[in-house]
Image (cartoon, rainbow, N blue to C red):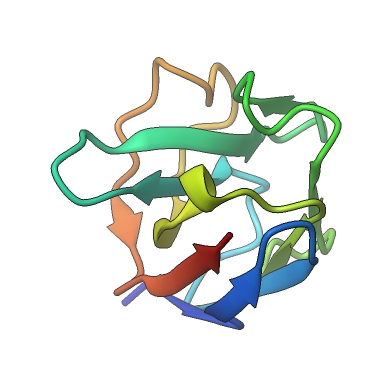
Amino acid sequence: QVQPVESGGGSVQAGESLTLSCTISGYIDIGGCLGWFRQAPGKEREGVATIDSEGTILYGEFAKGRFTLSAAKSRTNMSLRMNNVKPEDTAMYYCAADTSRFECWGSVEFGYWGQGTQVTVSS
């Protein structure tokens, strides 16, 4: 059973940094898609960043220049470094995995999801 587990969320001040981590158990090393997503109260879930089997990383517009996705080659660990966070970054952040290898951003329906970790940014 593939199970992503997130950690590292918390409450921070605007302008600070935060690193989220994800450990993915039971994930066969096939280099599939990994991704970070978020959902704020009253809003739809949105993509933050994804990485495909060739290591290509794509970011949401709001994440470009501030957030950095890193993933182990084994695809069993992944992190999201969040710099210069803003109050609008407040959301539940989810780690997700899938056996698809490409077109991870916008085309893949990720099949494995973590429970999420809350990030709260105060001004």
